[in-house]
Length: 253
Image (cartoon, rainbow, N blue to C red):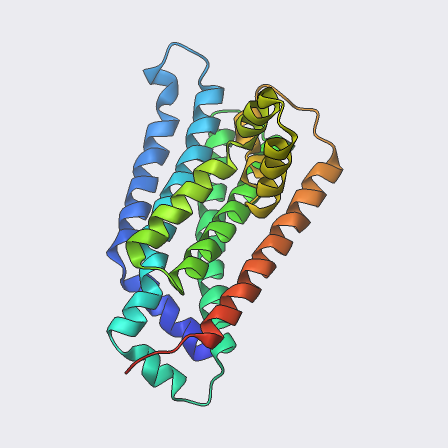
């Protein structure tokens, strides 16, 4: 499993897209520090919203267009046959990919978060609990996205994986609107179907607290605890089914 993790790390480091993300991250640091001179409005909200959105968007693009190709490259380059021919179980292959890719996301988001908090200190902006939890929830959102991509890539093409994952990502942010529409139909079947669909979909809307930092502050600590464990449980379930599908998958050499 360690060798798989190290090989995954090498693939990530060799990917030029990662360095492009880091380059733009540096540009945005300079830009966000200069925002006070570029706008006549209070730059507090702009800086916080800007940073939290950019961290998520950068990783959304990277996970979709880099992670979705990892399994396909293993098959296309025939390296997966070499790996699976060794005394290694398939679940170890999946877990090796999982732990190293997750660790990579965590470490770089941690670095981005530290830089973000430094910018807030430089701009004399209060670092609230909601800002810190927004960063944590962004990590969970990306972890779920990561495993949705890998789950679908075990039985879908690369393009279809990206499209389906994007559809789930946007729909999962819109269940308040969907439930409102369902309630207006006054059809109990439609309402119950929408509620069950919300349970099956990732809890992105609940994790998306960055959109309400400036309009709602009264979050109970149980909200953060529940959604943290909910996210971990959702990731575990996706991981379980990914391993099951990958175990039953046949590779033609």
